[in-house]
Length: 481
Image (cartoon, rainbow, N blue to C red):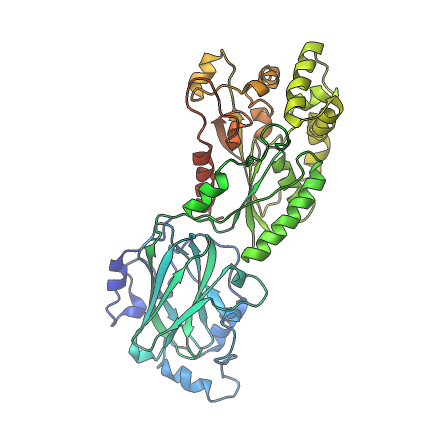
């Protein structure tokens, strides 16, 4: 991601030119290729303080320290007891996934300046940070490591900190409890000293683990598992697999069969609890089927666009489904076809004809296109991604050859065949309906394979749903989310 530096970058300091080493293509302030562009920056007060402070580059920086005690209009607007979080400015971030070591060169240019580094690290990592300064500048480096809560407005204390001395190194080691975004602050111990520094980060353990900036929240879809699968997980094995890779993952539970506004309000309560527990500013939603509509309602009607980084929808009926049209009577079909659809979906949903009609009523093409979509436009603050499942009939060998041997599950066969007249589908949702926002393409699976349920009994191996969700998480990481 353009952020890795080898140990050679640290060796180029040579102390006689620490403040101006140009070997990696950027100035001493540490700017340059940096990291991901981050919309949220440190408080503006840091820049104001830098303008008000003494000019550390044109005079003896120790004069700035002396000025701190002199009072008057030119004295710094802080004390050693000031909260560094109120003074920090954004610096190039550290992305520690698979990294080590990384180096940043910077300069504390005036009193009351604090350099802040966002660190994206994986759960289970152990990382060492080292900040070294020149003795001539009397800059005593203090490193402070904060959790995700530090990016909010409430109080936050450093979880661990270390202090060095001018010409020596402040060394800080941290154990990362959960994948996410952390804050590392570097400043003079007294908030008075100025001068250049070298900051390095080295992963000591768990360096192959993965992370996203915001916690991943799994949102389940339409129907639930009341009769078919009993107590099995909806996303079978997905949370455990992602957590094992280093990600911070949470699974939500809403009503199995209910309208989207009700389910979205239930989802909102759980997202509030997740954010409170983790301190995260936002979450990334991965949603299957109706869960994607719940997510869109959450963002569009409940105002969660500032709390969601991305909504990734897997086979969400964003334009409705003709299966719902047939079951509720919006689309005339033959008696035999209608009976087959009711038999299949009645068995899946565990209810009679009336229950099946009620469950599908909100997924009709007319309802989604005419009511839901106009009421829930995309929020520009959120990344909308989508994926569609594509299944194949029992004797459609050409389709199977193109889709890793995928064969639709018998329970979905009737609706698959019904939808096939209109194009590729996963047994419930047409590919054309699932496409929304940035379309990531199709996967070889039916509506249940997409979440690891009811694996195919036909030829060819089952769809590797765990690898699929690991890929989605990796994409979120690469996008800086």
